[in-house]
Amino acid sequence: MAAGGVARAAASESQPQSADAPHSAHKSRSKAAKADKAAPATPVLPADRVEALRLALVGADDEAAIEAAATLGASGAPGAVEPLCEVLAAGAGPARLQAVLDALAKLGDAHLLRADQATLDALELYSGHRAPDVRRRAIKALGTVNDPRATPALLDRLGDAASDVRAAAAEALAARHEAKAAQRMFALLSMGDAGVAGPLATLATPDMVPRIAELNGTIEDSVIADALGDYVKRADVPDKLRIDVLKTIGGLSGAVATTALVDYIASVPAKEDRASKKEAQKLLDQRGASQ
Image 1 (cartoon, rainbow, N blue to C red):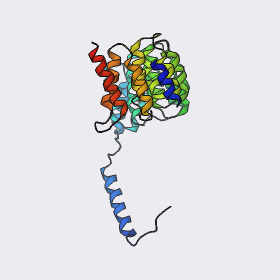
Image 2: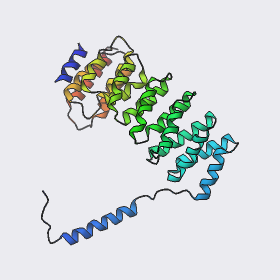
Image 3: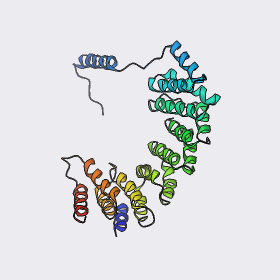
């Protein structure tokens, strides 16, 4: 049994300074100077531009407010965060909130979203908003905040009623390598929640892989194939375990399992002689012959 094969595989001083040191130090300083010169400057929004965008954000025109939020989010400027957070503090309609949260998520991806308590509190508040689209965007923005205080709200949203909100929370937790989320994600996967398959693959430990394989017959094959297909591409997975996981994928029905095999083969460098790649190709050929 393929799941059994997966289970077995899962179990199993400084140098003395030379006379050239001053010359080397000069070369190092020259390289550093060139690097500094080549490094892009941090974008800056002029104060009058920030003020104009701030006024648009809180004005009566929703379209202008949404455009202002998008401009601030795309600016990559540290000064763009404050006016956006002010909208969260004051409150706004769903469309404007979504635009503001999207902008904050972009700034967060650029590591510009501060981990101050006010920002965390606002994003956590909106992660519980009545509108799922607002919750999902708040979770995405919160996930970019590099602070452990953001984690409880992300874990809480794994229990959200909306599948896309749960998926956003799972993705944020996986990106943070939050190991404590793995068991909750497995529970969701065991109920057929496809949105957690990829994130769970990022966090899964070897002992969890047989449990995923053993879900065969209880949930859709496509969900298992998604999870195992992403898992097998991880660089830290031993090749012997990869082979057993690939065999499990090969035993699943449907296009998603086929795609998982194709994607795995494509993920292996062309010149790398990896036994698991040969196994995946063999399984793929067998699927083609049986159709």
